[in-house]
Length: 415
Ligand code: ASP
Ligand code: MG
Image (cartoon, rainbow, N blue to C red):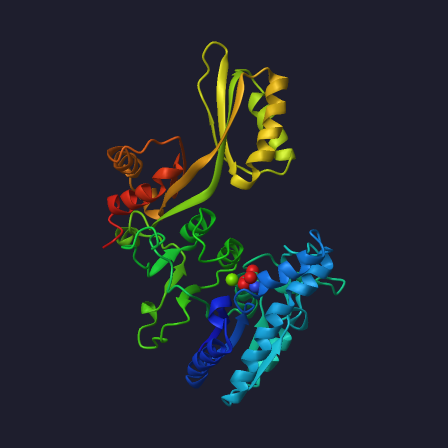
């Protein structure tokens, strides 16, 4: 007997047949006595269809109306799923975000959840009802419908689990958990039984797309036990640990350190580009003069390198999202003129590969293992950055697959 929030993504509810399968699965949990709140996405492809409908009318549709439109996708799924549950003899009630009263700010298309009214949900649960909530949407203070950004249903699920202090938030998707790396790149990648929130956050922000980053942040902040699992596998009630990947909190103590793998996973990101400004005067304030205008243009900077100066000048390199390369290059070219720099070079044929693991905290030598493995394959490293639990390198795009495979092997992640 537990209170479980279960979230089903687009592919898991992509057809009415799949919706019926989801209803069967929920039934198994109900029969066991669990209280269930379900959060669903729109049927797969539906949100994209709605977006193109809007764009056929206007390239920049009114944001409020855009959210009214986008929120309809999830409304279809909650009704169909509730019907399927009712047909099976389970009492179910569907609710839109605004009916639950998922209060958000007014930032249309990327709203943030501020509060969730718990009372109505409790009343239904007490009556033995399965609650089916539309993900990805809420309502602002003035009653306008808002949406939370692509992939936002994960965040809805975690937020509801936090509000209800659920025993677990289960995110059902089309993969059966979080892997040591993308199995499409490394077929020997293995499913992780556990990963810490911090590691998951790094993996998500470094390009692993299993969970929306905001959902992971939210779960970490409110200590919501989170599990990623496949909606195509049978539930395994005998050995819960064998299902999917549990995202946990790091444990202190020697024992847990010994169990801890050094590296949990290899993440990579293809959406990177790098910019170099050559021959800038090596004097105080130069970093600010270069990066200030980039920030003012709302372009996010990731890695930064400044070389040691020679002959009074220095070179400066940083990375941005590939989509921002053109805009950043324009800003930087202006700056170059003002500073009397020699040249600006943009390069979008680069990728970032990262190793992630809390085990790094207590072990030296991880970086040299990484660099040695890459060197042995003749992979040149352009940039390096580190944090307490990750090391990232920028390499040429053509080395992505080789680099990821090499590191996966170097850290024995295949088991
Ligand atoms: N339906 C929305 C999307 O496609 C939200 C979600 O699936 O989480 O982005
Ligand atoms: Mg989704």
